[in-house]
Image (cartoon, helix red, strand yellow):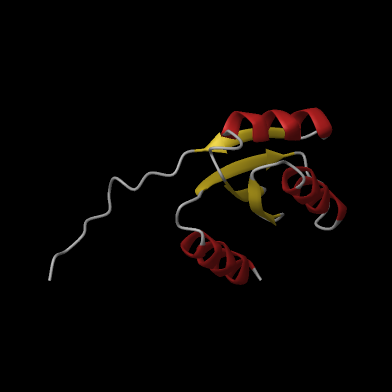
Amino acid sequence: MKYTLILASLIVSIALAGDNTAYLKVDGMKCGYSCSGKVSTVVQNLKGVKDCNVDFEKGMATVVYDDKKIEEKDILESLENKTSYKVTLVEVSNKNKKTDKI
């Protein structure tokens, strides 16, 4: 299941290459169905959000959004205001990746 979610997130990220992706740590979810569903619903109802995948087991949400319509801070604030969860942004670094030229 978790590999399916990771693969789905990767496919969505590639398909929407011009968009931004935010990785959010969501603390306080107690169940996989209604808690992760609530996070997904709140985020997907924001203008500028294109997709949201919630991994309950990891307590993570992957959000694909258009930064011309919404900012990361707006997503975080909306989740904290409309739920009882503590939400933090997870920084993902690509600095260690090297590209080889053929």
